[in-house]
Length: 302
Ligand code: HMG
Ligand code: MG
Image (cartoon, rainbow, N blue to C red; front, top):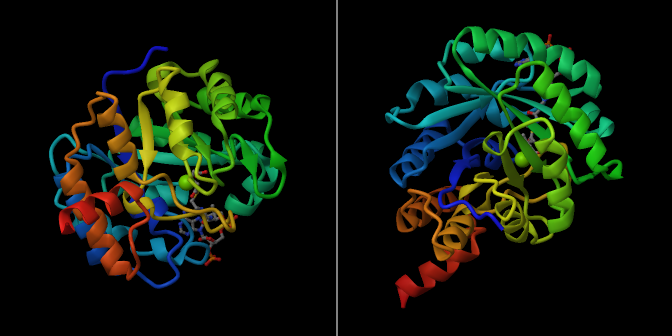
């Protein structure tokens, strides 16, 4: 056990969380959510994506959102760019980091980005090169690292293969994503181990959806390996349009409660974070998906 003393959280709520909403969410609400997240102490926020508006209509307001954010010093704003067209659009909006996103399963790669794993790497390579030349950091998201909605279980070797390809084109750090939340601790550790053959411990993060209620256990399993970067979504928002039935990311509030309870620093003010979650839940007209927020709100009301 080599638990980290500090954890960096990327809140992906504005992007992963909202991309799947059926009703359009006005840009002003997304911007306000980003403001509340940074006020709560989040130092990394995944704001939006530059993908086809026909595929993901909810992210069509990327420019509007990015240009309306009041940037706070020390906060890193990241955006998804699947190809050069997306990168060229994004670069005008000055993201601190761009994210290329691939999959460890062929079927998911086809459904999500309409190309094979090998083709995706060919598309990402010039994006990574352009980003690094422009001084923009590059992250690689790796979907379906334990299970795929179309192929079932995914072997760690597939994850290692993708991680190696990402490393080969100059991706600086990667997310080990359990897109459909089917993972359990040992499987997540195996996916992490396969990734750690290509990236250092400081360059990997856990991105766990909570469909089967395993995301906190999986977070702990990764923490025990020394992983100290994680992605989560305020209020547990979200899901991927190409992973039917998959629920949102683990709620940021729940991860923060876990970490603080273990004496691990995050720099996040849990009360302010709960308020940010209340804000977005009210805007979406449904209760928060965070168990910790529900408990703290009940305590406040009492
Ligand atoms: P394609 O159809 O193969 O691309 O889509 P294409 O190059 O043949 O272009 C077709 C049309 O899309 C053209 O427009 C292009 O201009 C347009 P048309 O002539 O038909 O009007 N186009 C674009 N428009 C805006 N921005 C762009 C762009 N590229 C092409 N960047 C593409 C390929 C990747 C674009 C498409 O498949 C797509 O947009 N997919 C959406 C993928 C997505 O956003 N998925 C959700 C995010 S990933 C995720 O949630 C997982 C993650 O959280 C980790 C995890 O949990 O696993 C990250
Ligand atoms: Mg995701």
